[in-house]
Amino acid sequence: MTITTGPFPARPTHTVRRGEVELAVFECGDPAATPILLAHGWPDTHVLWNRVAALLSDRYRVIAFDNRGAGDSSVPTEVAAYRLEELAADVRAVVEAVAPGQQVHLVGHDWGGVLGWELVGTPGADSVIASYTCVSGPNLDFLGSYLHGPFSAARLRGSLTQMAASAYTVVFQIPGLPNPVLRLFSDHWPRFLSFFDGLDPALVEVAPTLRADMINNLKLYRANIRGRLRRPRPRTVEVPVQLIVASGDRAVRPVVHAEADRWVSDLTRTGIRAGHWSPISHPADLARLTAEFVDRIGDEPHR
Image (cartoon, rainbow, N blue to C red; front, side, top):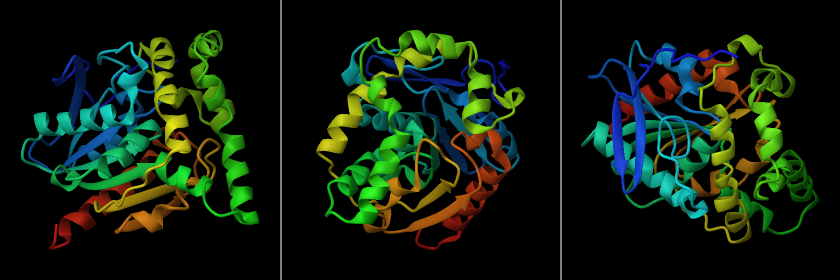
């Protein structure tokens, strides 16, 4: 198991307090350049982005942070503290603290992608977010709307495909049940990702808090999935969005994005031949696509 800090400093560059939660923020690159903010998912920390950040840091100010419940950030104990509204507000707090008066280009993976959708769907999001690139992160409200849509054979096939891919989330929502297995997995995480995603275990970098992060952040599943899928409330997104769809993603199937065109006013879809953990396996692709999108948005006169 490789434990490293990559291009980011070993200790947080900033600590941002929001209420009772302290968020550890790390950055690299040119502090005067266009800011790109990277958000991770389960069971990762900012370390997930090491290889992508290294490729972006020569041209951009690259900022990453540990979500509440992960890495060097605070670990709330209540399930309700992990609701998407709270995580989205954390992102806004980070932006306002480390890049006051600026817009950042947000990139989210997995649950980092889910919370990114939540943020860009809130009123006034464009005051802090210039663009949003989503990697393997479903919008739970879009997905819920799709699942509740009119019956068709194609919709049924799509729904069943994603339900099969997401079967593990049912277990994750039962308090205590997955904990023994996850403790075992934490000792063999690179080998599991090699099996699940075909990754070279030598490329898998993890934080020393991995075991605790796996358990603590199960609250993300318990706080959000059932409520959002049962009572979806999709909202119009005015922030420009780049949706990077990994063709080999075994956890998030393309069908979860079926509603995106309906709700996102400026949507760019891009496919890559990768699995779920593309920030590890395909950092050059993600860095290139992110840079191209950021530069395109920055060049648009209305931005």
